Every structure is written in C-alpha cells, then in structure tokens.
Length: 76
Image 1 (cartoon, one colour):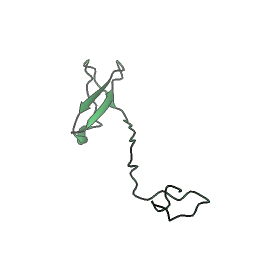
Image 2: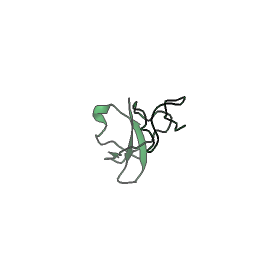
Image 3: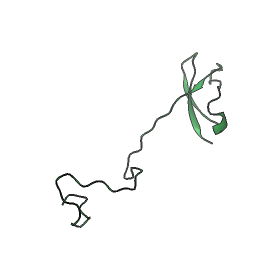
Image 4: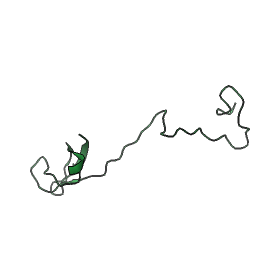
C-alpha cells in the first residue's frame, strides 16, 4: 500500500498515512483528531547512475564521435 503525505488545515501538522490508491485524495483525520486533512503533492529526487533514459549522451560539439576505448563518449 502506498505512503501518502497529508497536512491538517487546523493545526498545520504534516503526517504520513498508508492508504489504498483509490482513497489517496479522500480527506483523512490528523493524529490530533481534526477532520479534513488533505493530501500533499510529494516530490522526490532520484540521484545515481541511472537517469531513466537508455539513449546515449550526445557527442560534445566540435569533437568527432566514435573511436577510442568507449566509442568516443568520454571525449578521449
């Protein structure tokens, strides 16, 4: 079950709750019991070797593509 982030409009508390996707946007009570907390838009960053694209990086301008030990991708 996904984890969603919510904020209470009464006490301004931010909290997380695991809920089915079908109920993700439905109002939920905050831990203090206030009614009507709404889901926040969660953002995250993914950092690492995989950028999500399988296409190779373009060759640097002014340098011929190809050759070298790595096919010219390192600019050597």
